[in-house]
Amino acid sequence: MKVKNSQFMVAMLALSLAAVSGYAQSQPSSKVTAKTANFTLLPPTTTQSEWHTVLANNIKTANQKDLFINACFEVGLYTDTLVKSKLMVSDTTTAKASVKVRVVLDLGKAGERVVEPGEVVYGRRNQTLSATLEGAIAGCLSIVTNLDGSLSIGLDPLCVQPEVIQLILDTMDAASFSFVAVDVPQGVHTVSVQAQIDSSGTVQNGTFEARALVGKGAVTVESVRLIKDPNVILDL
Image (cartoon, rainbow, N blue to C red):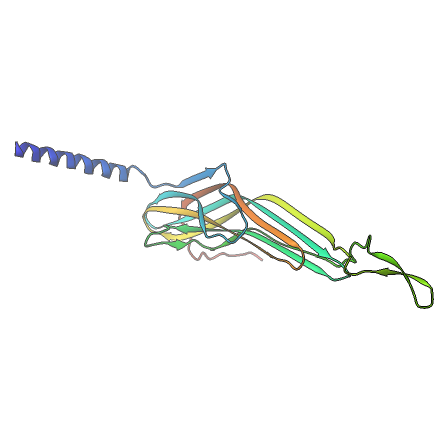
């Protein structure tokens, strides 16, 4: 009975190993792979965020290959600047929002590396609003009798209210960039596309708001063999 059980366990182990081996070999070397998303990948963010993986995909390369990686995303920027000025004192408000993207090969593994050319700006806005205004003086004027009996108009500066100017910009655009990973060794590799949002601003008397988002996106990865250091002859 023990012999039969031992033979049964050996047979089951052999079947398990065969199944795992078959699964590992079931992914052939790929020329092109792609992944898309039809929803907002990073919601509106009002501060500087960490790097977030928004799209990732695996590709199996044969021999020493190079990877062409194209990442496309919708990028939304929102900036709101408001200034308050009176008594001809200038007021300035700024709002900044940006989205950067990078590609990381084999994230979290021993061979992890950032794919060239590194961090790429997909959208950036630096909005500045300035104003120098007299202020709202309605109700702040009075008739003043001078020492010689003449009349003049007096203004109470503490009564003057600031005049307000506000500028809001809200845009959504699609941006695309190509990344290149050279000398990728044979095997299964993970291509992770990451995004980072950075928004900030400065104020004096006014207010600001800045935020950015990453909307729909798509990434394609193509396995190629690049010509290294080609000699290009130009006819002049």
